[in-house]
Length: 478
Ligand SMILES: Cc1ncc(COP(=O)(O)O)c(C=O)c1O
Image 1 (cartoon, helix red, strand yellow):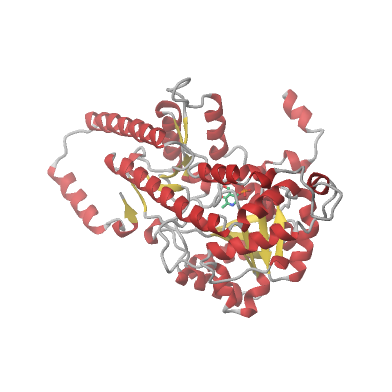
Image 2 (cartoon, rainbow, N blue to C red):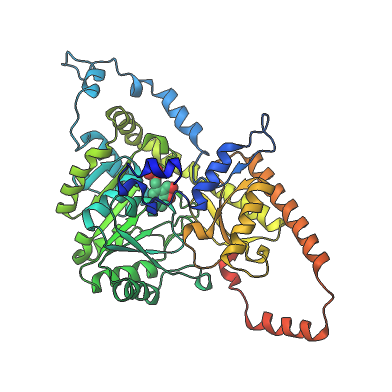
């Protein structure tokens, strides 16, 4: 037994079990990046981080606001006109877990504004959490007992394995979605996942979790999809629906048809007790380091339980204080959101164009900080998940790009990868696309040299196969 294995025997089963997902290629890629990070001057041949869904495109807007509002971080001033104590003293002393009322009001208003003020949020139904990570785990704790299951459409954000399963002991059962319809959720796929959980795995299903807009797809759910989902939850009577809407403000193509689950629920009061929304400022405002998230629910019991649980991951008082001023400045939030979306749209275009020049397509997307990229044609002949890992390793080690393989997102089809575009400069993205292009051209030259001349029978077989199996080009963009 190795020294590490022996030492870990002294720890709890919970922390040493492997449901955390840390061994996933998603996190391994980050480690590789950290060992050899690209820097234009000090390490120009290093690995470019394309596996991190971080929004660095609009930090300058936040910095300008801070420079224009020094009072928001001036903790020495008096807490109020009549007070003898300073704001610092107020913030430094105990805050209860209900959060600062001014911040909850500002956050609720900001959430409505992002959704075009078509819905409103009541601050009393908000629970503040240390990011969406904590919000999702708290909901899993509140809704499921160890051994119970949540259904999640694939491909999904790899962090959900950690957030929903690791400490709670809950399970995730995949709702298998396919590229044949652009990975949309169907009633058939929902029923199939439910049957897999209940009949095959003998699990009690407590809910469905969806991310809208989707990480890793970068797409928003259609009203039809949301209706299908709501019907399923309503029909199954005891199921909950967790809607992770942390990318809501990144919907940069703003289709009028993009709606929040809140709009669906407002029209279906019978569902309202079983639908819970997760939001955060990590993506929309690009502040993952501030650790600000929230749960919104009409269910009073869930709000009360989640509030108690939030003690383990509160948002610090000075963060709430600063952000209540920033989010309360409606002119700023409106112009920030519009400009941020414009920058994201430009970046997505740059990536699609770069990939297109290399003959690589991606799923047509309208939101998020990444593209869902189709590299099936670059897999070795077998086209299996081993081939996907082989290609991934080449891209990380030889090309110097850390991208996330579809298998780390539990995609059912090998050959898809998530590539992030908002955590680097325009020049770095250009370099990444250039590296990828060189790799693909080299790879194609090798394949060509290995190919034997084709006989007429093989050519005829190919033509027949191509005409019967056309890919859904409508859903792919270049
Ligand atoms: C879908 C989804 N949910 C939750 C999270 C965690 O976000 P936070 O930084 O707010 O904890 C992420 C982070 O990438 C995510 O993509």
